[in-house]
Length: 338
Image: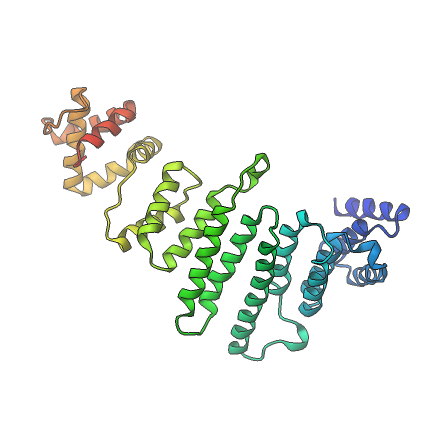
C-alpha cells in the first residue's frame, strides 16, 4: 500500500511538478514511511526554492517542512522560524491544527543536535523554555479568535499543567495550575457546539479541568464535576472513578453512590462480586438480607427486618436482583442501610 501511495503521488507530480500539496505529501512519505532521506532532502530543497507567492497560502508547506526540519533533522530553530513566518499567510480556518504543530516540533521532538544539553539541569531548563515558547504561540492563536479555539485552549492548559511540574520557582506550581484553570474556563465559555462538533465532545474540557482542580487540591469542585460527568455517562473510565474516590476523601464528604450504576454492575457480573464480599463481610450480608426481604415483600416502601435464614439469603437475593433491578434501586433509595 505504501508503494501504491508513493506511485500515486509521483504520477501526480509528473503532471503538476510544482504543486505544493503534492510535494509536501511526498516529503512526508519520503522521510517517514519510506525512510529515503536523500530524496526527502531533494524535495525539501525544491519546496524552499519555490517563490513565496506560489507556496505561502498552503498550510502544509509550513507545517510539513517544519516537521521535517524539527523532527527528522533536529533543527527546531528552523522549524519554529518556518511556523512563525507561516502565521502571516495561512488561512484562519487552518490555524487551529497549524498551531498544534509547534508542540510537535519544539517540545515532543529531540533537542537540536548542535546544542544538546550536557546535563539533566540543562534538560529541565530547556524543557521549561520550550513550554514557554509554545504557550506563547497558542495564546497568540486564541487572541486571533481561532475557529474551534476551545480545542486549542485545552492544549494550552495541558502545557501550563506540565509547566507546574517543570518550574523551580517558589509558588510557581500553583500559579501555573491556576493559569491552566483560567484557560479551561475560557474554553468552556467559548464552546459553541454545531453539527460539526461531534468529534470534540464538551467533556474533554471537563476531564482536563478535573486534572487541574485535583492538582490545586480543590477537591469539592473536582468531586462535583466528576459526579456530573458520571451522571451524564460520558466516557467515565476507571481513571475518573479513581479521581472521584480521591476527591471525596480530600473533600471529607461521603461519596453518594449512583444506585443506577450499582444495579447495572450487579446485572453485568451476575452479582458475583457481591457474593464474594458478602461471604467475607457479615455487615454486608445483613444488608443484603434486608434487601432480599424487601424485594420478597414486593413493597419498595417497607423497612422490615429480614426474616429469612442466612442459608437461603444470598441465593434468593441475587435471583431477585437479576429479575427486578429497578425495584432494587427504589428500595435502596428508601432504605439507607441498603
